[in-house]
Length: 372
Ligand code: PLP
Image 1: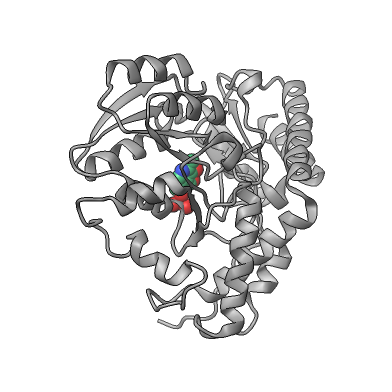
Image 2 (image 1 turned 90 degrees about the vertical axis):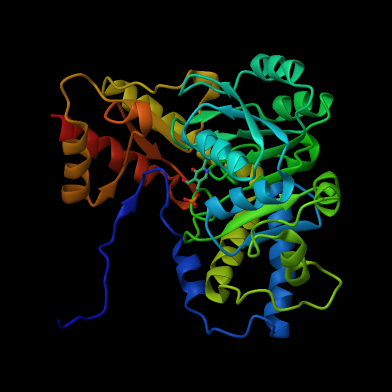
């Protein structure tokens, strides 16, 4: 078989992620590879930490990008903070809450599930009731920005409730970071993970995480060794911790980290609050255009994520055929529904670099033509 270089087509990525990558990020990625213990690289890592602290709005020392995708950030939170025998309240209102439950159980802990309808946020009252019924729980886990439905949960209120019941919180903001208000320190979030490929518009494969002092104290007090060597924070800290000599832990994905650094510089240049406002503005334009095409969003207005728009597929429309036509005729990717929403919704992302007027107009005109 004769093979040659791979040249992907140029697409517009308006699905649930990855999102369109800013050309500046792709350019950063192609810069010369240097050693992961090179002093110049180590300086870049220090900057990266400060940039991530800004993006998360935290002063947490333990803030770093995990060298693996969002699922690894998720797993890092659970394997370090949850021990066999623990009880964890897991709020499920979509696919990613289900994955949290799976993680809890694989840690040898008991998951108590608080369920909400897909497309709705986590109900704080249900969390309160579950915590009253399970005083033995020591952790609450929930998804801030549910990518499978486009629902945004009130992370501040959920964290307050968990803390009143002496629980730490683990928050998934893979789709939230950079696209919607998120204030890790002000809201008191103990452990959080995100992803590089959504509103940061970086290439996929890195997972920013942050842990506060309470989370670090719990990790230090563990009775059982963390079952994962790669994700054991006590070991990772030797490489990412500041003030100490950096020890080899794994070979960092050097060029991918240049890319993340660049995407965070871009976020800082724009300003976090401006980025949130831009996502909101383009979401409103998309929503208005969708409504004029007779389409509706499934999430109630006050709980919509601007960066992930789940649109009900009208009766009589072949949703897969529409997506195929968008891809073939417009080189435009939008997402399908997952789980109970499979076949019922399209998921339209307006994330990071892709949250712009051109994409909104392209998507609306492509949908109009595909449904004609
Ligand atoms: N959590 C949420 C809310 C997500 O949307 C995703 C990915 O889409 C993940 C976790 C997993 O991230 P990754 O696919 O980068 O492993």
